[in-house]
Image (cartoon, rainbow, N blue to C red; front, side, top):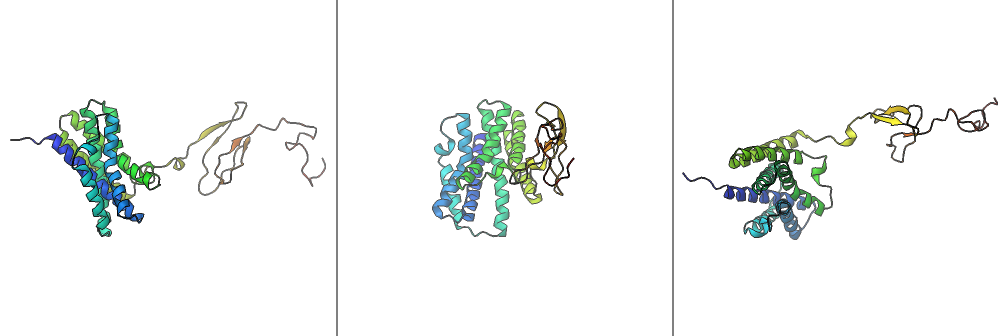
Length: 279
């Protein structure tokens, strides 16, 4: 019985990732009302960007996207299809699956190729994640928006990490074909579920951390925490409540003023306020 060539599988999965990512680049181009040139440029950069980043990081010569005859035509064809395609509800749903299908393909091929050239296991996982999200980052930078992988969006990098780890484990068990299949399937299923359930990682502003605050002399003053949405918290003694224009600065520590005297009876302000009764 003839065994399936892993190199053939690698190229097939790689090109599937190119096609899916190029379609996604076309979706962004349509949202920006680009012409056919914009579709092709954005689709090609999105489809080939992850693989080029992977090959440059690994230093294995020219990127395979520039030496294999199928990569560039696949990206251009997918971009033109995205330009001509009628977009509707079902098309958008299929794009969600294609999005995370591309993530799984790139995570699997990136991790496998890194392991095959002798890269250690942890950098191999990192290469897999960067391969999976690299094309999308290039696409987003070209349209002057923050890359979706940076937050507030479905779990792209997290899903890619899961797929890369699966590929790593099964490649170490000498099951690269099973690893690629499982990585692609898991990323497609988990990513689609994350999009449907609107799962996102929490941002820094969503954490309620208690931070110790000290005066300039090193004396412990209080513990500050981020104000709740219901109202502002009153800062403890020794902490100024001044805030910036946005009103979201934490209090700043000021020197205790109880011991200051300047000839006005120990008033912290240095003199009685206007209109106050004489002492």
